Image (cartoon, rainbow, N blue to C red; front, side, top):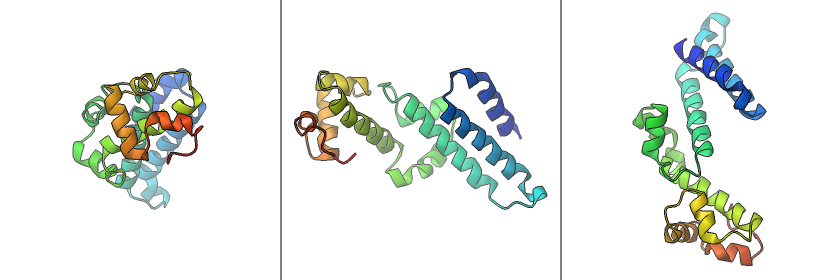
Length: 163
């Protein structure tokens, strides 16, 4: 019940600053929590733990997307900011190669899109804008992920580098 009340209070407090899609997702999360909490009495089936994990997973994903450009964004930062248990979060993102890999993947995906959309912005600035600490870190990570350098994406006029 505490989790349900917290979710509703958070949604109510931020409703003016939340996109309609995020508000809809948050409301759906609350409905799922209510269904989990009262499902047995209502004749519904489903695991309360599974629903709580799904909500936690979405919370982490939403937090990462909202803070993608923050160079301080790391698995540690996410855990501290959201107050979530490390083992649970690592299990949730195990299929992604871990939370750090998930963050890096989203950053690189956004970078590939930005390199094509904003060809006048220097490559290093695209990397910095997405939280990479140096141009060489960005280039190295991009090359490992897509087998091409960031500037090559621009030369290929945005042909899919795997994003």
